[in-house]
Image (tube, rainbow, N blue to C red; front, side, top):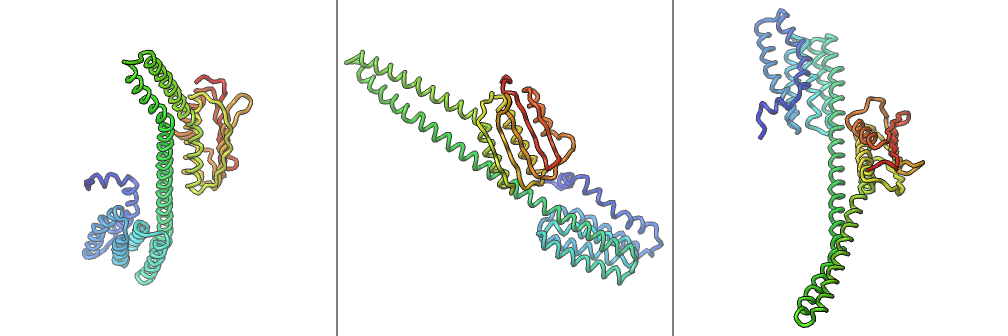
Length: 358
C-alpha cells in the first residue's frame, strides 16, 4: 500500500503549480477590507479547498462529482464578497474529467458553466467573475476532458500492443516447439532403437553391434547439424519476424499499413541494427505521428540495403530524440546513413552497405 507522503510526491510539480490560480483569492482575502466574519469564512473555505483539490487527483470514479459540487459551492459562497473566488469554478471544471467518460464529462461541464454564469449574474455581475467562472472554466474543462480522452486512447493502444506482442511470442514459442519436435523426435527415436539393438548384439555379433553404433553416431551428427541449421535460421529471421510484428502493431493502432520486403542477404550485425531501427520507427509513428497510413519498404540497390518507413502524419523538424539518435549511431557504426524528411509526413531512409563487416 502506497504511503500518503509518497502519493503526494508522485503527483508531480505541475499539481502544485496549478495552485497559482488561487493566489488572487488569497491576496484579496488578506488585503481587502472585509469584515472579520467574511475573512473567517474565506480562510475556512480555502482550508477546505486544499484537501478537495488534492483529493481530485486520486479519485477516478463518478464520486468526483461531490468534489466538483463542493468546489462550486465554495465559489458561490465567497463570490458575493470576493470576486476572485470564481477561480474555484475553474478547479471544479478541471476535476470533472477524472471520473467520467468524455461525453458525460462534457454534459456535466456545461451544467457547471450554467451554474457559474447564473451565480455570477445574481451575486455581483462583475466582468471578472464572468470571465473566471464561465470563459476560463470552459477552456480548462475542455482541455482536461480532451487530455483524459487521449490518455484513455493511449491506454487502449498500449493494451493492444501488449496483446499483439503476447500472441506473437506465444506463436513463436509454439513454432519453435513444433520445429524441435519435428527435427529431434524421429532422430532421437532412431538413436534409442539402434542403441538398444547394439546392446543386444554386443555379445553374439560384436561386428554387427559396432555397425549399429556407427549408425547411431552418423544419425546423431546429422541431427546435430539439423539443430544448428535451425538455430541459425531463427537468428537470421529477426528482421522478417519484426516486419510482421510491425505490420500487426501498426494495424492494431488503426494505421493502414503496406509493406514491401524483398529478400536481402545481411550480416548478423546489419540485421540486428535494421530490426531495432524498424521497431523504433514504428513506435514513433504510433506515438507521435498521428498518422493514418504507413508504408514500409525494404530492398537492395546499388550494393546497399535500404529501408524506408514513411507515414502521412504531421511530421516534425525537431532534433532527434534518444530513440532516433541511438538508431542513427547504430547505423553509422556499420558504415550506413539515416536520413529524415518531413515535407509530407515523415520519411525515414536507412542505407547500409552490404559489404559492411558484421
